[in-house]
Amino acid sequence: MSDEANAPGDTAVESNGAGGAVSARGRATRARLLAGARAAILEGDGTLEVAAVARRAGVSAGLLYRYFAGKDGLVAAVVDDFYDGYDFEVFTTRLDGALSWPEREHARLRREIDFLCDAPLGRMVIGRRLCEPAAAQTDAQRLARQIDLAARSIAKAQREGELDGSFSPRFAAAATLGAFRELMAEALSGDADPPRAELLEAMWRVGSSLLLHSPASESSSSR
Image 1 (cartoon, helix red, strand yellow):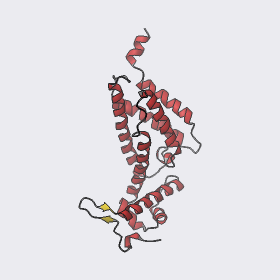
Image 2 (cartoon, rainbow, N blue to C red):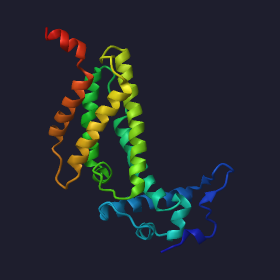
Image 3 (cartoon, one colour):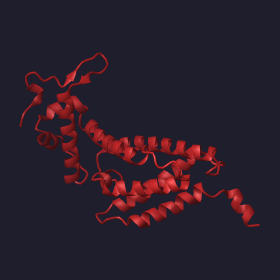
């Protein structure tokens, strides 16, 4: 195993007076450590050992602390990296603007279920099998960001008259994402392949009952 902390000519973190700029070789080492941590979490069914990650990356355990400030920092980085891909695939990728909000949301929801079922870390993070304490804090922070994104989408659809505007966009986003996360946590907690069509139908019923039906219109139609 090589020890890059002592490799001649390699300064992994070059100080720039504002926290340090990571060199190209440093970025490559960090990427290897992240890849090693992902593999260790998957093989360990939600647990992680620093020494195992260092062996996978071909560096000393001490070097890992230069990049992630310990085990908690490494776990948080793995969860953040998972959410970066999640957000890109599901929340920040634009769908066809010619579609209505319900059509776009249904397509987005289908893509979200597929992503979580296919992503190697989906069962670990969303299925709550990642047992490291730092994972829960990072997960909560990223969920709050997703609620922000969803609330902005709902608010825009309300302004454009596609959704009932009588409820708080943030409350609606929290309610629907909370229900979705619990649904997917249950679906991904085991080893069987989740029934994707059934998950889509269940979540669509929950979301549409809140977002697409105005209580005022329903009470008037029942008279």
